[in-house]
Every structure is written in structure tokens, then in C-alpha cells.
Image (tube, rainbow, N blue to C red; front, side, top):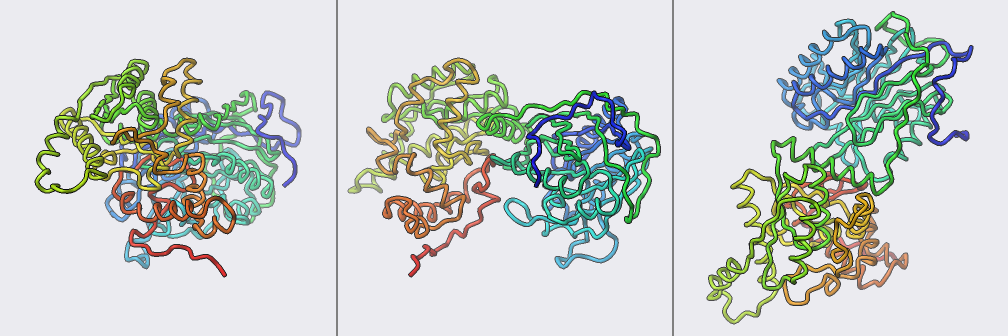
Length: 591
């Protein structure tokens, strides 16, 4: 790929040069839609479309599967749902005017069925204008890796139509179509497209924006035409979508970039490529010449710093999960440790501090500073907090179980009992007041099973389940920096991690320090390496590596029973990583 400016906007206020054949005004419509909420999604689309019409846009572009929501999963196996999503599209088409619209929806075919026995359906883009649904593009490339399983649902498209919009031949593609070298985007450009529109529901993970940017510039370099990339915003279950829609010119200039993790309609003027020989079928959508004279200044929103990017993903993921499932308030156990502290800060920003209820549940083993640190944090965040000591319940259980436990030494059972009492307490509060329970476990603990099933795993959403322990500390320190004050007390940041389920307990008594633990776990979980791989590579103490790999394997049954949470890595526990629970493979050394 030739050298290109790095994320530099083009000066759209300059007079267009003689070689510019056309310019266009386009609306990048980042909408936070809800899966299955067809009427709600239609309202969002119509509002953004009205904004685009008022700005005299030639084209409004919406994300992939905007009408049904993404991913709709097995909803698309319901014929009535598919039919109603098409009825919703018809309502939108009627509302269009001179501004054309490209909208994601589920299309179906009257002919035959798939091998699965279900009707043939497509991940599709509708092209609408002047009150009509003029045509449809069907997605060609169906991803079937990581969190994607589109081949379970959709049939691939087979045609490469072009659409004449304001005198410009436009190629429409959908998400994965952009990722394929020599794929649909290249075919359309070779067939006469003067610009490519790519609509997306591209989930966020760390460094994803860099990967997308390189891909977009690679495709622009290959096709020689501008590329309009519109991405979804919002969260659906564990997936979070970061927006960051862009327009990149044929000269690799960044014409426009929308904000990350923010719902907005971004308006941009840009030049399109010179007309080229047309060999593909072209359907006229709008004939009105563009009103754009490249007189809008470029609007390129700043990229977030890496830690802020993760933070906003966690906040958005929590907010959308809670609100979209009909809740306003949450509760959680606040222990004075770093994990529950970070959850408190995320929840306060996501929902507003008045909707966050921290529950301090000290036991006979809790330190005084755990309670005082929790109280100070709650005051600093402005969240509601209450103290419910679990000692009466704990003693009652010990007395109740004493005849059965007679002659047995206290141990892990008694430790786990405390955690389970806390889980029951939180669920009782949630049931009484209509709250949703957040769990506070991090990815390091989930990896090795250092959590109590039906105890600290009890809840509806685990907002930091995909955040490694060392990253938890980084995010907590960064939170204080961004707030400009010591919201999180220093003592929480520096105290040794402990579950406080027995006297003087610390995490490093049973696990390596997190500086050793996390890098090994990342290799095992995210990079698919076995203990033997790491030992052969000299990654650390062989006994430690073998033990950790074994812990990861045997904890799978716990992870299957824990709440979902926001995905921020390339491989989260859940949709990404599907390991068998009964699993005797150990990765034997070679040779």
C-alpha cells in the first residue's frame, strides 16, 4: 500500500478542482437500535432521515440490519418477524424524499428453503427514495468466526448492482464484504462504481479501530474510489458497537469521522471519483443533481485514548443492557476491593449515581478499612449505600449445618457460604425494589475459577468479566485522572487483593502475582496456546503454567453458569470461546 496521510482531514472548504466530476452530501446515521423493537427502530431511522433531508443531503446511510437490530439471532427463524421487519421498511420507504436512504433489513425469498429447512433469507440493504423501495442488495460474504455465525441464518447474495444517486454510481456492500480481497467492493469498483458504501454492525474490541482503518485504506487503495463506512452504535447483550463511522476519499484523506460510542448523525460533503466505464447494471435512485459544493468544513471527531475507549465501551455496554431490559436501577456488593470499586464507578456514569445502590456486607473476617473505604467511595461517587452485616445469617447457617459437619474442619465450604449469603442478600433486595444485580468479577478470576458459584457469580450482568485484573487497576487509576480528583481512595488502589473470607487472606497466597498470572492467562485464553506451548517457549515456571492451564480447563463449568458481560477483548468468555466442559485434553509436549 502506498504511503498515505495518517487520519488527516481533507480541506473541504477549498474550491473543487477541475478533475472533480461530482460532489455529494451524505449523512452517516449512527443509531442505537434495539433488537426486535421494530417500531422503536423505525422512529430512530425516520428522525435521522428527517435530519438528513433538512441538511439537503443526497444520501443517508444506516448500519447493517438497522430495522431488526443486530444480531437478531434466531428471531429471523420466525417468518412473522421477517415479514414485520419488511413492513417496517415499507413505512420508512414511504417517508423518503429526494434524499436517498440505504437501510439494513432482513430480506426473504419466496423460492425454496435452506438446507436447514428454514426459508431462504438474506442480510440485506434497501435502497429507498421519493417514497419508494427501489431496490435491494444482498450481503455476499457471511462471517462464521469469533462472535459471528451468519451462515446459520442467511444465504449469500449473488448479484452486484449499482445505484445512480444524484448522478453518481454507488456500490452498496455490507460489513464482511469489505474484508475480502478482490471481493464485492472490488467487483463493484471495476464495474463502474464511483464510490462504495459499506454498512456495518462491527463489534468493538481493543485495537479494532486500527484494524478497520487499515482495512478501509487498503480497499480504497485497491478500488481507487471513496469509501463511506457507517457502523452501528450501542450494545446488544455482550456485544458493544462503537460507531466511529468514516468517509475516506480516493486520495486516502479522512473526510469525516463520527464519534466513538455516541449516537449521532454526521453530515459530510466530499468529492467522488471520475466516471468510469460501467459494466454492471445501474438502477437510477435519484436524478436531482447534488447540491453539495464541498462547502461544509470537515468534521473529524477525535479518537479516544486506549483506556478511555475501553471505559466508554464498559459504560455503554452496562447502560444499554440495564435500560434495554427494562430496568433503571442496579445493586451490587461493594467490598472495598478494586473490582467492586470499578463496577461502582462504571455504574454511576452509565446510569447516574441516583440509580446505583451499593451494599456493604461485612463478615467477621472483613477489615475495618474495607468498610470505611467503601463508605468513602460511595460518598465520592454520590451513590446510595447501605450496610447489611452477614454475621447473623452466617452463624445461623453454621448452627444449622453443625450436625452434618460434625468432626469436619472448617475450610473452603465455610468461605463459600459467606459469598452465597451475600448473593442471596443482593437478590432479595433486587426482587423487593425492582433492581438488577451486577456482579463484580474480573476476567482473571473467571479464567481460573476463583469465584463462588451461586455466590459472587449471582446476578444478571457482569460488566468487567472481560477485563483482566491488571487492566482493572489501570482503568481505576485512569478514572481518578479523568475526574481530576481522588474519587477512588488511594487505599483501595494499593491494598493487596483479598476475598476476606478467612483471617489475613490474600489472593497471592493461592495464585501467582497478577503481573505473572495475567500474561500467562492471556496466552492460554486469548491466543489459544497450551501449557506445553508456553513451557517450550520458556514463558515461565513449568509447574505454574501447568497449574494455571488446568485451572482454566476445570473452571469452564462455572463460566457457563455466570452472567454475560461486555466484550472488550478479541476473545471473551461467552460467544467467542466455546470450550467443552468435559475436556481431558492437556496439550502433551512434542517429541
